Image 1 (cartoon, helix red, strand yellow):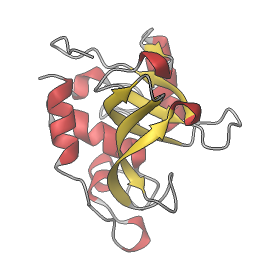
Image 2 (tube, rainbow, N blue to C red):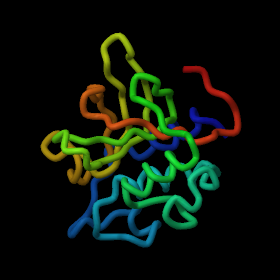
Image 3 (cartoon, helix red, strand yellow):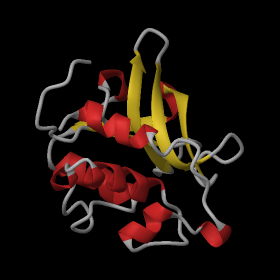
Image 4 (cartoon, helix red, strand yellow):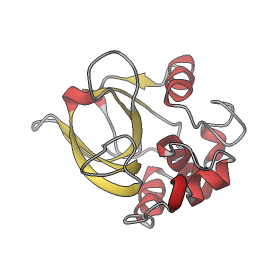
Length: 160
């Protein structure tokens, strides 16, 4: 399994919309239903491609449901990179208001270094609420709102 498999799995869920009171399959799977679920989505996708071991222990055996725990995990593994070095399959962490606090996460599906942007597949986002919008969506994000990226140690090397 590779980063490409992760992107293919994530894209299967594009357009998914949460139910009432933030009811969603990703949070339910993780054991944290009815709460913000962007990180649960990332953990779900890695686990459902057989690559859950790459984030196991970030917070639980299933990965992470807290962006802060995800960042700490990748930093401890020496797998944290500036966004300008992002690769497809990396996990991006966002800081919308530039206050140093992580707000959201998603999976990098495309990198445009010249345009200083990355395309991400994100759970619990929308056009009106980037961090709590209730939809799975793939969208371009400016380097300026990204704190950095964590790089899972995929089993096969991927081309940038």
